[in-house]
Image (cartoon, rainbow, N blue to C red; front, top):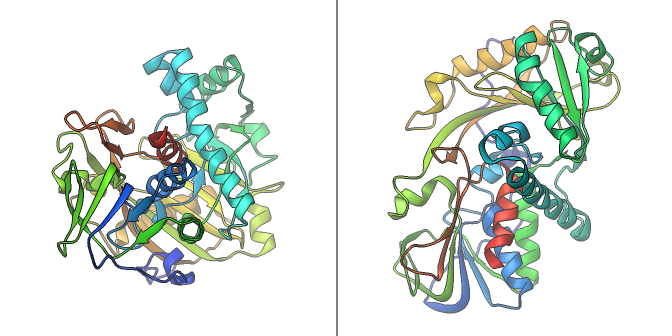
Amino acid sequence: MSNFLPKDSVYWYVENPRSNQVSILTNDIETDVVIVGGGMAGLTAAQSFKDFGLEVVLIEKEFCGAGASGKSSGFITPNSEYGLEDLVSKFGKINSKKLWDFATSGADLIQDNIKKYNIDCDYEEQDTLMLANSESKFKSDLLPEYNIRNDLGYDAKVYNKQELSTILGSDKYYGAISYSGSFGINSYKYCQGISKILQELGVKVFEKSEVIKIEPWGVETAHGHKIKAQYIIVCVDRFLPELKKLEQDIYHVQTFLMISNKLTPEQVKKIFPEKKYMTWDTDLIYQYWRLTGDNRLLIGGSNILYSYAWYEKHNSSCMYKKLNNYFKNKFPELDIDFEYMWPGFIGISKDVIPVAGIDSENKNIYYISVATGLPWAAALGKYSAK
């Protein structure tokens, strides 16, 4: 392990400077639909309303992909904070299948956009691999997940500790399940790419234009400019309470990501003997990791100390040691240097289920928030237009 902390920067931003020209709102305008927020949910909502033939304006406080969507690990899978078995225990089989298919539709939408518009975003098809950190977790968490997937007609494979060695170069896990249909992306480049496409299709995108007030007639920015609209769609994840909306329903948690230098083919082979997977484990505050298209190791996680902190924690030697030691323990033969580490806040609700729906007093205002997982955000963005 290096004696120096990784650079305190979001790797995606450093390696991919923005090519889109920033357009700042400088006057009052009118439109059919105004979308507040340039993350996955907001961009997808803008695309969906545009598909219905409406005039759409998207307004963003910083730049598209500046928040949780752009800082994320880019895991595109229906799994989020809830696995399928968790959903079934909470909502029953019929409703859980509907929710799972809904999230899957969001992943499909992202994939369709990437292929249709040839978006350069480090798209990599990788199966999901859920790993048990103990034998008891394999029995209590992963086997029920495997069984319910089979019961509801979804593909899955199960591996005991011995079988796992054929697909993973570590003997520190006690079993796993895998399933297909997932992939990884550079979500910041995706947000930037789809923003450019939307503008080419006629959507007006204003960045560096912070909204401070939401009213039935539209929104007002920090510089006093107003956008009047028939429909107001608010997609700002954890920032809704700052707009005096749903203050008792929206919270946040902090997570950390680290990315390594490029691994050699030999190092990659020691991790994944056959093919790459997107992985996470069974810890309560779980670790998750994958390899990017250019074979950098991306690993994320958090701890009790920082998960619910009020402010982002930068240059955390504690989290660096935790994540570095975690991977070193699982793959002791590998010596990997991490180049960048950054924190990020994601919004959550009390029950970790996305918050989406029409304002209780103004039926033309629609909220999408705490959509943990990019597929959920995309699916809810599309649904808002319906």
